[in-house]
Image (cartoon, rainbow, N blue to C red):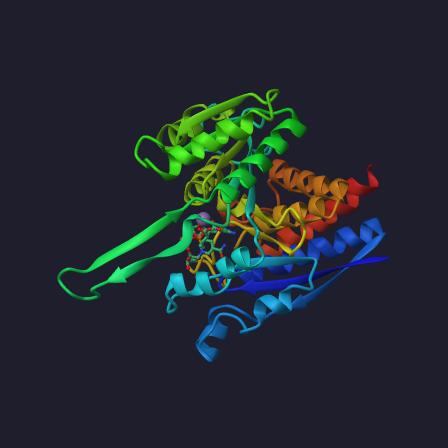
Length: 359
Ligand code: NAD
Ligand code: IPM
Ligand code: MN
C-alpha cells in the first residue's frame, strides 16, 4: 500500500489549530479510500523556535524536508519577530529552496459562501490563479545603502528571467488548454517598462504554441476593478508574484473570505516536494480562541489529494465544504456561524462519510 510521507509545519498563531483539522480530514480520506495511507512528521519550526534558537528552522531544514512527498503548512508570523525574518526564514525559503515556481490559487465561489459582490454566482466566480512563485518582485535582490544616514537609499529589484517567465506562462497555457478555458495575463507594462514589457512579450510568444486558447491581457489596476465589477471575465489567470499575492486576497474576499482561500506551491517536475497551505496568515487577532476557520486548510488538503492523483477525493472535500456552507449549521464566526475550529473539522469528516457512501 502506498504511504505518502507528509512533513507538517503547523507554524504560528492559528496555524496549528487549522492544521489539526487538515490532518484529521486527510486521515479520513485515506481511511475511506483504503488504498493508500499517510505518515505525518511534525516539525516544530516557526516563531517560537526562532525565539529559542535564533533561526526559523534547522540549518539543514531544506535537506530534512527533501525526502517527503509533500509539505503541509499552517501559517508563519508572530508579533515580536519581524515578518521579513520569519517569512524569509521559513515559508519563502521552502518555496525557493524547492523551486515551487507555481502557486495555484482557486478563486471559486461555492454555493452558500458569502460574497460582497451583488451579482456574483458560483457560475461567474470560478477562476484559477497561476501565480509566479519563485522570482519577480520576491527575488530578494536589493541593497540598503548609507543606513541611518541622511542620504539613505534602498533598492528592491524585480527579477524577471526568461526561464522563470516562460515556465509559469507555459504552465498556465497548458492548464487553460486542458480545461478548455480562456487565459488572462495580468501585468503592468505601461509603468514597469522593463519587467512587464518583457512579461507581455513572453505571454504573446508562448501563446503562439497555443492558438486554440482564447487570451486576454489586462493591466493590474484595471484587472482589480474587473474582478469586482465583472468577475466572470476571468477563468485561468497568470500573473507575477506580487500581483498574484495581492489579487488572490481580493479573490478571497470575493469568494467567501480568508477562511476559505487555499493555495498549492508546486514543483511541477516533482523533483522536490510541493507545499500545500491556506493562503491566510497566522491571524494573531483570533489565535488561541478556537474560532479560526479550517476550511481553507481543508481546501488545500483537497489540492494535495489532486496532486497525488486522488482527484475523486479532492472533489469530495470541495463537495463537503460546499455542503457545510449551504447547510449553515456548522461554520466558524467569519462565516457568521458559532462552531469551533475542530467542530468544523469533525463536520467535514462526517460529511465525507455520508457523501462517499452516497457515491
Ligand atoms: P492574516 O491572514 O493572518 O489575517 C487577516 C484577517 O483575516 C484577520 O482579521 C484574521 O483574523 C482573518 N483570518 C485569516 N485567516 C482566518 C481564518 N482561517 N479564519 C478566520 N479568520 C481568518 O493576515 P495578516 O494579519 O496580514 O498577517 C498576520 C501574520 O501572518 C503576519 O505575521 C504575516 O506576515 C503572516 N502571514 C503569513 C502567511 C503564511 O504563512 N502563508 C500569509 C499571510 C500573512
Ligand atoms: C501569501 C503570503 C506570503 C506571500 C507572505 C507571508 C510572504 O502573503 O502566501 O500570500 O506574500 O507570498
Ligand atoms: Mn498573501
